[in-house]
Length: 131
Image (cartoon, rainbow, N blue to C red; front, side, top):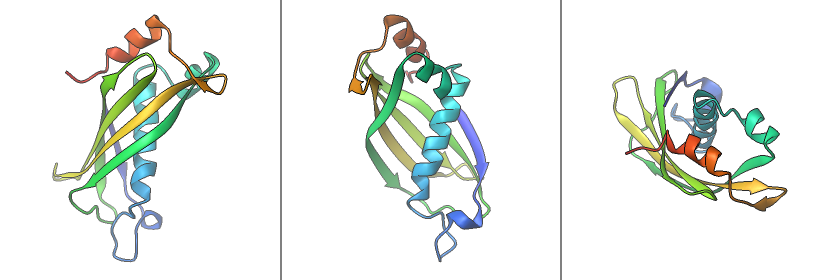
């Protein structure tokens, strides 16, 4: 799944690069957009009584992202169980150069506690797992 967006001045550090904290914002936006592409927007998941809590993020910085750059964030599920999912996300610049890689672990939560999702919902997520 792909999410495209421009980098604005308020997101950059004094050097004109995307501030390291804002990578988390981009990845969050892209995961929310990916869920919408899967026809599982956050609102719909919450109506099912399920939340997804991020428990771990690992980020590798490869190349700086400049002010006003248009980036594409590619998101896929790399590992999946009925209790948690690990997302692989990558940010590419307009020259299609890999700038950043993240692995994000999310746990499914029901009534405030980790809980397994239904087999049906699990199957829906599996359709978007990378091969």
